[in-house]
Every structure is written in C-alpha cells, then in structure tokens.
Image (cartoon, rainbow, N blue to C red; front, top):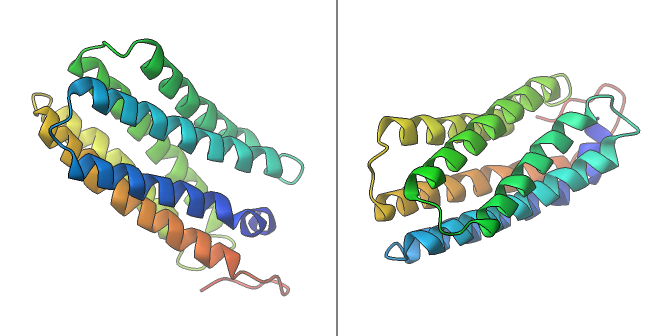
Length: 185
C-alpha cells in the first residue's frame, strides 16, 4: 500500500492545491450569493472525488481495501453532481451536504491514517485532515443558522488547512524510498 501511495503522491498534492484555491476564493469573496457557494462546493467535491477515484484505481491490484477510497471518491463526485443539478437548493440543503460529506470524508481519512501507521511513523497528517473534516461537520451542526459569509469563511479556512496537510503528506510520500521495513519519519 505504501509503495502505491508514494508512487501516487501527486494525488495528495493535487487535492491539496485545489483545496487551497477553493479556500482562498471562499475567503476573498464572502459576499457571493448562496448559489455561488453551491457551485464552488460542487466543483471542489467533484475534483476531490476524482483524485480519490484515481488513487483507488491505481491501488486496486495491491490492496483489497482499495474500494474504500473509491467509495469516498464516488461519494464526492455524486455530491458535486447533485449540487450542479439542483443549484437552487436552500442553505439548509448546503449545510446538510457539507456536513455529511465532511463527516464521511473525515471518518474514511482517519481509518486510512490508522492503516498507514504500520508504514509511516507518526503519521498524523492524514488523521489531522480527517479530524478537521469531522470538526467542520460538528461546527456546522452546532451553528446551523450561520450566515452565508460565516459559512464561506468557515469552509475557506477549513479548505486551506486541509489543503496544506494534504500537500505535506504528498511531499512526505514523494520522498519515501523502500528499504526493507523502513518507516518514514
């Protein structure tokens, strides 16, 4: 599994760069209407899902749990497609989509981090990304009446931190060289 992840380090960097771009736009343009937020979210989860699908397809011959990443990717793409098909949905629907997506993504990323601990020493970056995703879902549940601007800022900050952690993980994976039972520190 670690060999496949290290060969596909670019998927983490790509996801991270897109997350940072998405987060910067959300912070820079908070006055956008709810429909613009819906389109931004839809684009983000589709691209994120496609990166997850690409990673899962490259892992399928090497790991029998490749389908977990595939499910996460398909869920992201599906959430994005639904977003584009019904752009007039209410703010509540956006809250629900983001909450569910964040929670599912967070749980799956924490599960993946636990699996990686056998190969990467002190592997906390992926787990931290998962915790951030779950925190986003919990924060949105706690304050459902937040304004569109507050939602844009919350999502923007989350996406930037999430993107930075994914880029850091990708860089660490790029530098991984197999040598026996090596553990990446």
